[in-house]
Amino acid sequence: MQHVGLVMECDYREGRTQDEAFAEAFTVANLADEAGIDGVWLAERHFAAPRTPTDPGGAGIPSVSSVPLLMAGVIAARTERVRVGTGVSVLPLAHPIRLAEEAATVDNISQGRLDFGIGRSSFPRSYHGYDVPYDESRERFAEALEIILKAWNNYRFDHHGHYYNMDDVVVTPRPYQQPHPPIRIAANSIDTFRIVGELGFPLVTGVRGQGLKQVADNLELYRAATKENGHDVDDVYVRMPIYVAESMEQVRADTEESTMRAFRRTADTYIRTVQAEGENATAERRQRAEQLLNTTYDDLLGDRVAYGSPEEVAERLMEIRDQLGLTGVIMEPNLGGTVPAERVQNSIRLYAEEVAPALRG
Image (tube, rainbow, N blue to C red):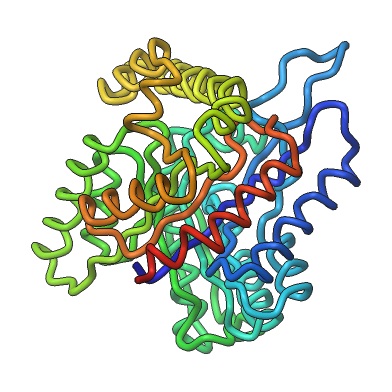
């Protein structure tokens, strides 16, 4: 396995301040750098405020990571060796020229440590807040990616498309990595796996909403599409909940409540997406929502998470690596956002020091 990474949701814990949320995020980034994690991946979360007595709604797990490239630049300046990625930048919600400029800036600040993870997100609420029609997300994503690649691969360029028009544009700074930072596209729906394969890009996917069997089936679609389109690429990272503790009893005590909270929210997200898509909603999304609504913690231990002692987690991840043909795994360290910070950091340390060497061996 080439990459052992860590996703950063930058949790905004209920009852804590924004200052404390940022401080915890930077502590995790420094720990990853010092402990030998290969890369940290900054999530993009919009309108994810903590619940309050006057506003008990909330949107998913609270987070302060609404501008991942800005966070990535700060982390790059504070660290020395860890790669810094976006996990993911939601292309339809920002102007592609601005994204090209910001990503190239982070690439220079980090001296070539940026990984540009991109996607279109499955959260309709984010699109509503930006006044972008969710049903335009796929077309907007494709056009934005086209423009970003033009900006990085050409000194001067023009573009005339459906959503953007520009003439004689020169983007500065130029990326530090040439021709540009590595690009990795997120896929979670069946049709997206095929599209990423047709484009010939490395892929990242998650197991939280799918389960390992569905991921394996979807990766077959990705790999078939790469071959059919003449692309010599088979580069897959999987993002999954991973928690390491001294015993399984300790794992359960630390994570059960938080984990179940997260999966209930994931099910709610799929329900909201189905409602937003209306008649266009796929049977796949409907089925995922129903499955997650009826799942138990023990079900999750068997199919959607890697929890246990260092030895148990290493064995589990090596099985998944070999089963799916992975080149990387990305840890979700605090699924649900309520595991105490010191326990999360202990888990990350064990993952870096005792699990990662087995995966790289």
